[in-house]
Amino acid sequence: MEKILFLVHRIPYPPNKGDKIRSFNFLKALSSNFEVYLGTFIDDEHDWNYVEQLNEFCKESHCLPLNPLKAKIKSLSGLISNEALSLPYYASDKMQQWVDEQIGQYQIKKAVIFSSVMSKFLMHHPVEIISDFVDVDSDKWRQYAEKKRWPESWIYQRESKKLLEYEKKVAERSKVALFVSDKEAELFQQFLPELKHKIKGVNNGVDADLFDPEQSYTNPYNENDQVIVFVGAMDYWANIDAVIWFADEVFPLILQQHPTSKFYIVGSKPGNEVAKLGDRPNITVTGRVEDVKDYLFFANFAVAPLRIARGIQNKVLEAMAMNKIVIATSAAMEGIEGYEGRDVLKTDEAKEFSAFACELLRSPSNKNTSKNNRQFVQDNYSWNSNTEKLINFIKA
Image (cartoon, rainbow, N blue to C red; front, side, top):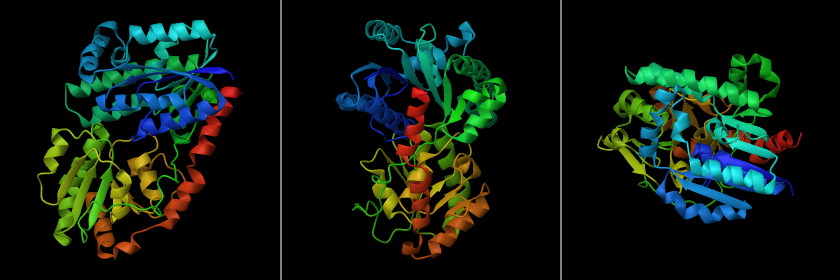
């Protein structure tokens, strides 16, 4: 079996958040077609518990610790070296040594990188590179800059500019540059029209067998609660901004008409800003939970009030796969194509968002289900069909 190197910026297991869901399914597909040599970082102490599970998919795995605080300090060296701060954040002599050894010892000719920053370990090697950028991260930093005050706005704007310069170099060096959707690929094509032929989209997917409303779930709510749920990693700034905006601008309007309704924020690592929302009446911040599907299944509906987003939002697809109606902003739905006519209510206005929510809360809970949404996910966002595209790009 042909050997392949897979470099991922965060351990692709367990598949419990957006980037790890995608990288894990890519790893599964690669392991069925290649002998995989995986190099990755672990930035969450809890994730060391899952290292052994990688052996099922890899010939060899190499996991290195990454301390987020130390990495942030190290990233400041980018101000001196005139590069994107994201690059020294992931700088590692140990990872570079391991990559060099694997390529030399096993004569590896092909590599897949997950996140453009991982390409730095391969730039001087004559290997064929398939780069999964996932999102146009430089544009995400531009959006962050627009939402922040100086000096953060200056830092984020600089990161956007410098990271775009690096992303262009990675695309030029790659055989194929992949993005999470055709729309995301089209955005990047605008920056490099001469490379349009090798900038492609490979959609995210949902494991519809895992997110299956026909399975048995445990109700985490009180029996008669009317629950609005948001699911997402709460150390991600776009999610933080989303739930704060919803709690400040939308939920108070909902409470005026439905004073007993509940807003649940379900996701790991909530910081102080999010944790404080749990002090407000009718808002619960759960932190890490054993199974987000329990919270999705028994909620009246799901919300995705993101004001900053890139690519495809797994949180939306997973809720749809669980037969849930979703109320979302245009940013949250931007990367999902063909959902029009499904049970997705889209608005960027707080008053209309609350009106949609109140209408659903007035309905019996059994009417807030949508087999239409689940069928859409099954038809359009299957991991098998999407990872097949990845394999075809590698073997072409």
